[in-house]
Length: 401
Image (cartoon, rainbow, N blue to C red):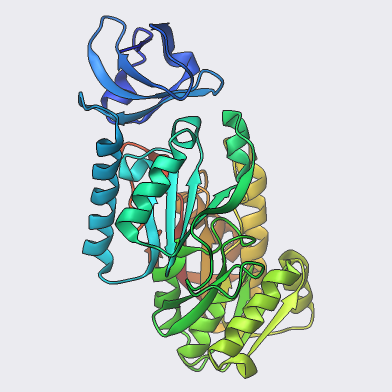
């Protein structure tokens, strides 16, 4: 087996369970292997570490698949997929909309698989998974028995692997599958009491945000009789859940006209369209305008896109989080509820709490933390890989000082 030897003292993270080997950690590569192929990984003196796939063109050069001496073949991937699906069945029961494979957390690095009813969406974000894409799609078709599998290989991270952007149907035709036609590419799923529409071809990520599912239901339980502002609302899932739980009025802000139109369509589908209104606007600008006209709400939800995609962006991200939280606090009635989220592992719970405290001081508000939540349980965290824990959702009470 071709072997990657790590530099002296650079094997501790991998030996502790970290799955990524960076180019700067590698002393040498022995043996012939094409990029995308399988290599053994050893410490400089030959101690066994694990086995994974190689891409010399990526700064993240090796992604470990196993710490054992397993053969990396079709049977290996079938076992790993079966283990991932068994975990979801254990923690989710009979749910039909969930993340079926969460990359490194399922010991399948760079593979993302989301199920939306009868449609499966797959992402192969590194070369090693990309060259096995059809094998994986075939196994998923066997194990999940979807009507269709859609490839959403358009995230920018693929460029770091030297991979092109690719999207399209991999398995079967979209007729049936709950789709509203191939041109529409919409799937209807159930989430608690709600019926949600997911655009698997044009939506963000794989079409929806399954990682917030449990948080949406927890927030909805606080919205009976409330006027709710849902900033960065995307396709309106938070707001629709709130309306179904008894919110008297939901105001959504979304910069994408297509997403806002889908939010309106989703609200109508659930019979709450008369209580939900969606404004197409930049959330920063609209929050500022709402403060200027002294608008008031009982619940404000902030679920922005990742402000910090890299460590270098953290200072600017923290300034952005502070601004939106400050404006949200000014829009809340005394005793109002603020839900504020960060979906970047570079801005975790401690930093987001610091932002909230700083914003509350500027807004002259008192704040109490009701609950700190994370990503839904179909997005489990790999303890040795902090990158797999990326979502923070704080639920806070805001009062006058």
